[in-house]
Length: 201
Length: 201
Image (cartoon, rainbow over all chains, first blue to last red; front, side, top):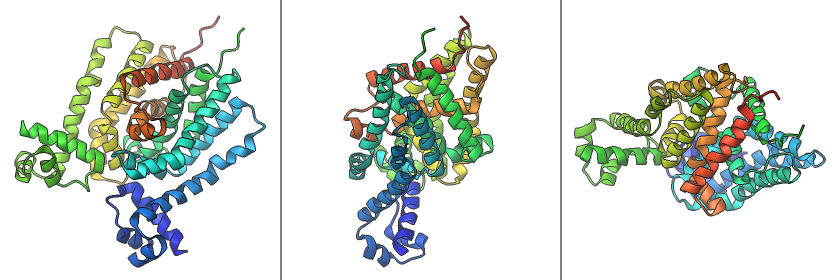
């Protein structure tokens, strides 16, 4: 499907270079198609960018958010732990969303406002709600939820955004199955031995 | 000093747009100087980029690493805590280093190798050593040091790399003195109640 090939090329190029530095011609070339195909399917570069982000978020939704439904009968603490492991895996598998957010966040772009309103407000609210719910149930200590969310998001995301740098530093990528699983284990240990309410002896 | 004005303009533009998208002419314009001044002081764009990174790391060294000397007589656990508060403040005050690392980390750039070799190998080693030392003294639990470092770096850095996004999401920047202090407090709480070896009752 040409439209899908164009979207995948667009995600990859926008994540690498940012909106301004990518032309519709470059996306067409990367997809092995012509520039007129881009305009036929998507109209403007702005529309192509939005479609590319929607494509990315749809893939991520399939991998991550939508899957939370299956955890309705799981207790608050376990749900938070499953959420974190899924979030780490999603970022390890695909760091392009964060790269696009970072590109758009460098300046006050209208695309950043669109991204925040359409996706990120809800994404942060999901984390904050899970933390607040676990706090209310008394399974984690009372701490500012937004700070905890920022700590979790940073801890789950940046390692993969910086994977090429870490490869230079340590001589191995942090994205192997083994490395991802080790980071997940350590994060849950560090985070929850801190977050869990101490049971009174 | 024209050289310093050029370096500051270069740091800011390279952090926003990445190496490829910035011309020496754009740096000169941003500094209110001519392109020939750039070439007179720095030669090529490559050399200007390296000088800009050195300028940034020097400022950060003054704010952060060099100041560790004063903590020689402090115990391992407290030293790690001071290190984290300083690292958060340094990133809140200036997210440009992370932005440059992320730009260069998108591709296999020769500049990334240079950055790793010249600065980042040592930076990561400093964190790993502080964690290993605290583990050896028995004040924190035994966990993979590199994972702990990645968690700490992510938790201390990403919030400020994404500050404009967070401003869209919450209607306030995470870089105010109050917000930085709240994040530091929460991070130390979350991290150390997890990392500290439980004292046997």
